[in-house]
Length: 417
Image 1 (cartoon, rainbow, N blue to C red):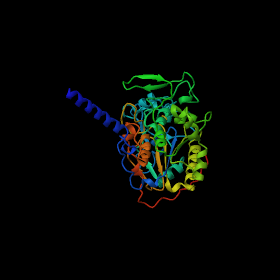
Image 2 (cartoon, rainbow, N blue to C red):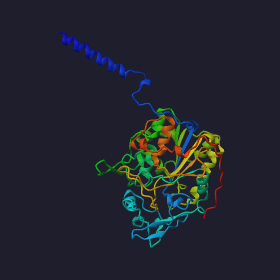
Image 3 (cartoon, rainbow, N blue to C red):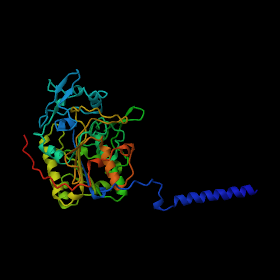
Image 4 (cartoon, rainbow, N blue to C red):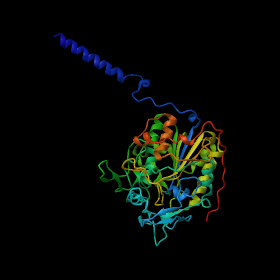
C-alpha cells in the first residue's frame, strides 16, 4: 500500500502549494505588472474630459488650415456640393441614430447624409453645412495654440447614450441607440417600461432596460485611490440625460453617486479654488452645442471653464481634453475605421489643452473615446477595461514634456447672434 501513502503525500503537497499561492502577498498578485509611467507624465496630476454634443470634425474644423478637413461633400446622387453655412441655432436636430449613421456612412462612401431625417429639407442640405472661424473664433484660437486632433472618431456608430458610456467604460453594454419612452431621463433613472436597443454578439438586437453594471474607469480609479468626480446637470435639468454614470447601477444606486457626481456648475468654482480631482468628466445642458441650441453660447461656456482652469492654481499640472459625443447628423468626409460590430462612428473634434500640449500642432493619430481612458490608465498604471481601451492610442503624442510649459491662454466670450 506504499503507493497509496505516496499519492496521499503528493495530494497534500499539491494542496499546500495551492494554499500558498492563494495566500501570497499582494506584491505577488497574478495581475501582470503594468508598464512604468512614461517620462514626464507624472507632471500631469489633473485630467479633465469635457464632452459636448453632436458635431463632426468637418462641421467645426473643416476650414482649419492644415487639417484634414473638407469644404465640399458628396450627396446621394453622386454630386459634390459645397458645404453651406451652419447657423448658430439650427432650424432642427438632424437624425443621428445607429440606423441614421449607417445610412450616412454608406459602407464608407460617406455620401448619404441627405437621406437621414432632417438632413435635407426643401433643399437646404443642413447636414452638408459647417461653421467657420468667424463663428467659433475661440475654438480656432485653442486649436492654433494647443493641439487639434483631426482623426478622433466617435466610439460607436450612433448617438449620445452609447457614446457617453464609452467615455466612462470603453463600452456601451451593447447599447446602440438612445433609450426609448423616457425623454427626460436615461439610465437607471429611466421610467418603467423604458428600453434601449442592445446589439448582441450574433448580430441580433434585444430591447433592455437602460441600466447596466459593467466596470468603469471610475471603479479603477477608486480601487487605486485616485480621486475623481463627474460634473453634470442634476436630475430635472437640461443635460441630465448625458450624465453617463446614471446608467451604471453600482454607482447610481449607491453612495458613490452622492459622493462623486456633482453639479456641472461646480466645476468653475473647483478650478478657481484648486480642488479639481485627479480625473474628472464635465458635461452640461443648454451650453452643450446640441442642435438646435446655440453654438456661440456653448463656446462661451467652454471659454469660462478653460479660463477658470488656466487662472487657477492647478493649471501647471492639468490636461483638458474637449471632444464631442457623436456626429449629430452632420457631414464628415473621412470613412470611420471598422474595428468591431459597434464602430467607429464618424469623426468628431478633439482639442488637447495643457501647458505640455505641443503648440499649434495638428495630430493625425487615430483616437476614439477609449483613448481618453487609455491616457488615464497609462498615467496611473491601471488595467484596461475592455479590448477597446487596451488597443486604443493613448494621446501621449499630443504632449511634449521637454518643452517650456505653455502659459495660460485667457480668452474673452464673444457676442452671440
